[in-house]
Amino acid sequence: MINIISSLFGRGDPVLSEASSRDTAAIAALHGASFARGWSEQEVEGLLIDRHVIAHRAISGSKMAGFIMSRLAEDEAEILSVAVSSQRRGRGLARVLLNLHLRRLAGLGARTVFLEVDEHNAAAIRLYDRAGFHEISRRPNYYPGPGSKAATALVLRRDLT
Ligand SMILES: CC(C)(COP(=O)(O)OP(=O)(O)OC[C@H]1O[C@@H](n2cnc3c(N)ncnc32)[C@H](O)[C@@H]1OP(=O)(O)O)[C@@H](O)C(=O)NCCC(=O)NCCS
Image (cartoon, rainbow, N blue to C red):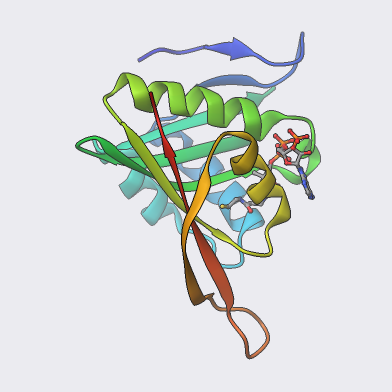
C-alpha cells in the first residue's frame, strides 16, 4: 500500500494516504457527523475490506480530517462518499482528496466515474464541478428530508483520460 502520499499545507497539516479497516471507527464517526443517515461501523468495515472499494483518508495529528471512498467495477467507479470534518472545511481538503482519489482510480483502470449528490449540497456540487464532473440525469425524491418533500439527486459523471 502506498502510504503517505502528500502533505497539504505545510508542517502539521493533513497527510493523505490510503485508508484501511483500521480506520473504521474514525471514518464511521466522521460519516455520522457529516450525513443525516450515518453509516454504522459494521457498514464502514464491510466497505473497507471489500477489494472493490478504494478509500483514502486525510489525517491531521491523530484525527480523521477527511475521507473519500469509491467502488470500482471493471472500468467504472462510483464515489460512495466523501466528507471533511467541519473544522477543516473550506480549505481545499476535499479537492486534494478527490484529485488523489481520481488519479488512483485511473491507475486501477477506471475510465468513468459516477456519483450522486443532493441538489441542495452547494459545496459538493462546486467541488465536483471544479473537478470536471457534469450532470447526466436527475433522481427526484431521492434523499428523504425532515419535510414532506424529498430532495432530488443529481447524477454526475466524469470520464478519466
Ligand atoms: C462537501 C465537502 C466534502 C467539501 O469539503 P471541503 O474540504 O470544505 O471542500 P473544499 O474546501 O475542497 O472546497 C471545494 C469547493 O467547494 C467550495 N465550497 C466549499 N464550501 C462551500 C459552501 N458551503 N458553499 C459553496 N461552495 C463551497 C469551495 O470554495 C471550493 O470551490 P473552489 O475550488 O471554486 O473555491 C464538505 O463540505 C463535507 O464534508 N460536507 C458534508 C458531507 C457531504 O455533503 N459530502 C458530499 C456528499 S456527495
